[in-house]
Image 1: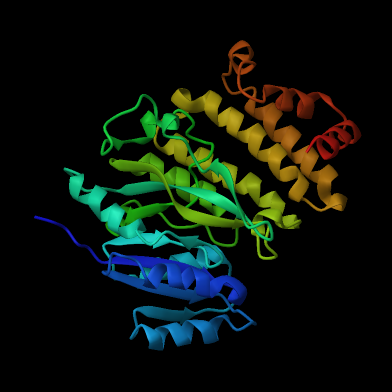
Image 2: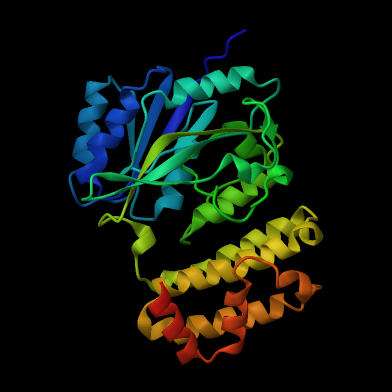
Amino acid sequence: MISTPLISVIVPVFNTGKYLKKCLDSLIYQTYPNLEIICIDDGSTDNSVEIINKYNKKTKSKVILYTQNHSGASAARNLGIEKAAGEYLSFIDSDDWVFLTLYQVFVEYLNKSCSDLDIYMFNASAYVEGQNDVIPKTFFNISDWGKPKDKYARYTFNDCIKPFTRNLSAANKIYRKDFLFENNIQFPENLKYEDQYFGIKSFLNAKSIMINDDIFYRYRNMTDTSSTLEITPKAFDIFKIVDLVEEEVYRHHLYETYKYALFQYKFNSFSSHYLYCPVELRKKFYEEMKKRLREAATRNLDMRIASRLRNFKMFELIKNCTFDEFDKFITTSR
């Protein structure tokens, strides 16, 4: 029996009127028809709501609008999850767009699955605003998930060779809604970098993941709305996000299995977010990451093994340098 489930596409919106039409057009003209498109306006002050209302009339309510006071993307996505009627959920950022066959191909994969499919993952690549060009680097490589399997093979977290790097965006995945509810998986509110926790928690709990490494998503990079480029005190949120990830690893009794990968995740995450911190707060950020990494190194780790980790020199640099030495190195090498 061929399954044709309702798919709820959740689009958090905040002042992206400049890009919103392209995003919504890529959804309403999908070759798979059984969709509802839920736009959560997060207190926009531009013409975003006006655009959504026009699409609501144009599509005879296929595009649905909910509004909230400005509370962030996590709160918007969580509201979308609550309101969604679909069996499967997809999260699309309102300044990005997707290929028109995305959901048709997903349903093809879904119908090849012999059991409930928790997560379907597809590839994405970045688009640089103003250059009219696509960055060839993709979100992941199929080789990240071990030896090549059948096109419709099912995976779990244990198959992932790089479990704490890449693959963590919510935008290039489709989730079974009941899977999220059964495992209490939500986006952590009032924190930046929420996709990292949501991504790892969902991977850890998933019993069935299907992967398509073809590109179906264009991520608009270097725009005036890009949160990834924002210099903000919220850069300190990365410490809370990493704590949440570590708690989830412990909850699954997997610390011993993944302790070196988790250690690598920490020094990579902390150092990469250092430059998002305002200059006047960087010394405080540096001292916090140094304290945390020194403590992590005492947790039953063999440093002879750890020294073989990718970017281990970054850990040594943070641990051994003064703040001025580290700051000079990181700001001139990035």
